[in-house]
Image 1: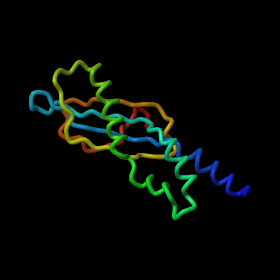
Image 2: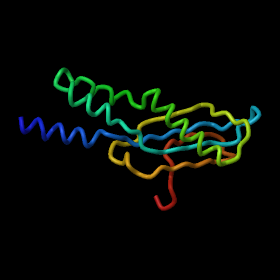
Image 3: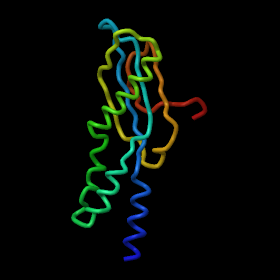
Image 4: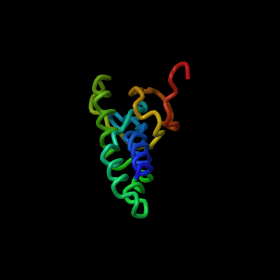
Length: 133
């Protein structure tokens, strides 16, 4: 029983958030004007608890981690990017060709990063390269 407690505590602490990236083309008046990129942490506390509770039965809810980011996570990332775009003073923009993916479990608590790249041909790389990295 003690081993189960140790394993449960380890799983619970390591799967409570993950780092995700979101990017989309910014379109104004049917013209692509740039690329919006966002990185931040997604909280998965409820999934971690469900994983521990159901994990003994063929992996239970733990299989859900393979399907992340979920649609709800994409919506959360989109909303965060939209709020930051409002500060850019863009009028009547649309976000097209959206992409989101899980980057890492280990740095889910890292800083949020938002970047608008103007006059780029494509949003082809999802990871934001910070100065000094």
